[in-house]
Image (tube, rainbow, N blue to C red; front, side):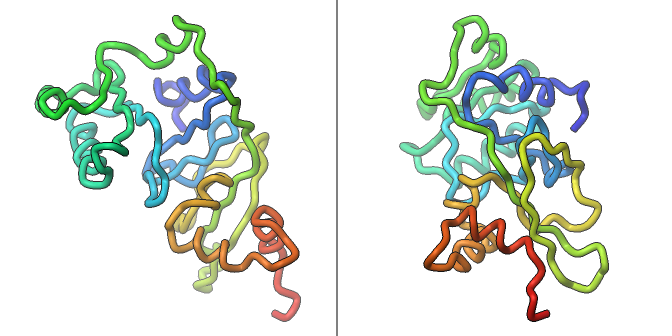
Length: 202
């Protein structure tokens, strides 16, 4: 959420290229940037094509280790180390394993230099968030947000957030639960919107 950070600016720099940009930051999770929800982590069921590290080398090392445990070799995303995030031990291991990665280049400069954009642009759409109720009653609050709505991280516990693709394929308990509530006469987006309304039986 800090506009002085390169990771923050990169979302805006890549905004018009048409890719699905998925910001991940544990502390800022549940907020939004350029209409995109900030996730706490890459969830089960989500397989990114590229993971870009805007991290200190030691933190990037731990993030890479988590990805190596999680993804099989053939599903491993391209790992892009922004300048300053490189960890020599990690790079040596990736080189020895023949795993795809990029160093010594900035993804924003690379995209601009080569005039790259998505072959099929992704439209930024509604996104979804569930947080613990501010009433302290143990309940949860499910909301739908539009991309032109700027949102700070919640002041209560974030239980889940994501865009429609996350809602559709994430293996997180909440995403799966929302999918289970879709009625026969509605789609997933309609169900997500319906669930924002208070239950008239309550």
